[in-house]
Length: 429
Ligand SMILES: Cc1ncc(COP(=O)(O)O)c(C=O)c1O
Image (cartoon, rainbow, N blue to C red):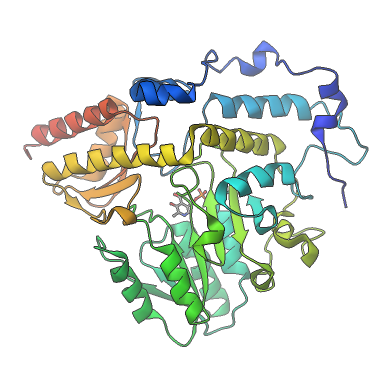
């Protein structure tokens, strides 16, 4: 097995290669200082505007869809570029050190993210996206033909399809419950889950934030309900890191996955799998393996033995975690909620039908509305092609509007004005 690597001790850094050559940063805009934390108290708009300038997204672009993928701001990009600069010299300190992850523990990258998510480092494996982590669960969870997984009817393809594959290949049964649209409270969701549980249910797999509606599911209560019946709970938290403050160990679920490239603005190619304890690790076989996969002493680290992968990506992840920590997750969540509530109220005033829960505990920074007879695809194309405003939705008339902290009310007003203009143009107003 390879030894633990330490680039910080490398000859390259000791030799003072901190400064990057101009070419490496040529694509980055000039460095803008991060706003000081006290600016928030003095002038909130100025604070968020200063953070907006960290992003390479042009000033005239309004991005209401980080729900698909985020954009890494300057401090994250700098960490990635610096990472390549350091690692590609191949001057690591020890003879067994190489610039790859996928064969070792890499606690210096796991620990900051684990702390950020309220988990211990040995509960968390860094993977390459949420799809990969969901596949680890569906592929690896110990089940036999006829055993059931219970999922909602709002799972992303990356949550549902791994179970469908297992079902077709090995005969497990995928049962679905219908989410209320919208749910009026947590009890309504819990009662649908309770009604759908059978004596064959082995695992419940649901999203924490629904990709279809943005509804935040009551995970703590779902996990408690499942545990009382001896059922495992697995949660797809693709949208959670960087959108909502979360404490994984307080949630009580057994398994949890997510993406860091969406709301946390970490590099593309970052995802994770959380496993609560050794009892659940004993029930989840790994999927991509190399030496070390079957060593229980390695705890969650054994799920990240995935072969040669990219260290600068993890350096970018650390920078993204540090940036979110510097701003503060409470502040980020509050900002996202405020903007989401604003756009939601404005759309309701325009007669939109909401799939966003009226219960504030069941929503955060994604709202969804239906706006018939508007064709969402036609509107989406028109907004992006003609006006540099990016939204996404579903057929025929659903809009999913995501509100990351770097947006302003003025950005949202621009979208609203364009929405009104589109409807007037089509004779729908
Ligand atoms: C709920 C949910 N799960 C999984 C995914 C897939 O995430 P990734 O691209 O990180 O694999 C998405 C992507 O939008 C999602 O919304």
